[in-house]
Amino acid sequence: TAETLTAGAATVGTASIKLALSVTGALTINPAAIVGGNGSLTFNNNVALAGFTFNGLTVNAPNSTFPVNATINGTGTLTVGAQTLNAGTLTLNIALTKITALAIGGGTLTGTGDVFVEGTANSFTSGALNGTGQFKVDTGAVLALSPGASNVSFSGRALNIAGTTNFNSVNNGSLGFPVATVITVQGGGLFDF
Image (cartoon, rainbow, N blue to C red; front, side):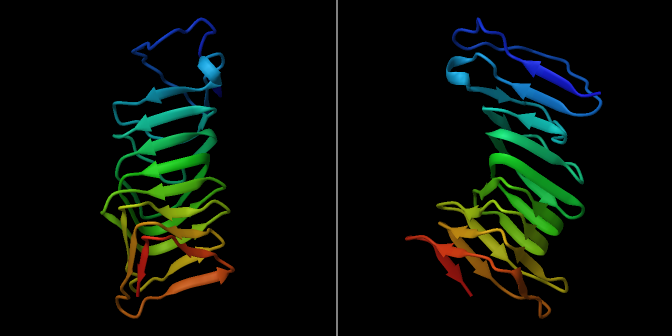
């Protein structure tokens, strides 16, 4: 069943709630009447991030993971720790997802939301980046594009480089652009071939 968790209208200041939550199906979390219609939510433990809708929230989930074929929706911002995508499809239809370290070794990252990678341990060796949102290598971040026997594909998702992206083909791997893809290197950014 689908569940909706809504904050009450009388929330003032900061509150800490310990909640044991078990949901089968989708979970929508709405901040309702929290100041300005916005709020924040932190998952301190590992949460399998799939089937969530975060509306107007800033969500921090440093120890959480995306299971195979996960979908996240909403209008908020999701910040997660290290993630690995080796199979299946990860669909991010949330306004912004920030990932501290992303390793893509297969599968597809898609969706309408923007994805920012941060930190210096990001890699893309196989798989596809699809969808309409941008994929940004944030300021100070490093992305190693190292396609191996399988190619790396950017299919319409804009690549925005504010940090450093290093391309190094392994076993004659290549970058694929099946549809028009915009690549922007910002001032201070580097795309090293």
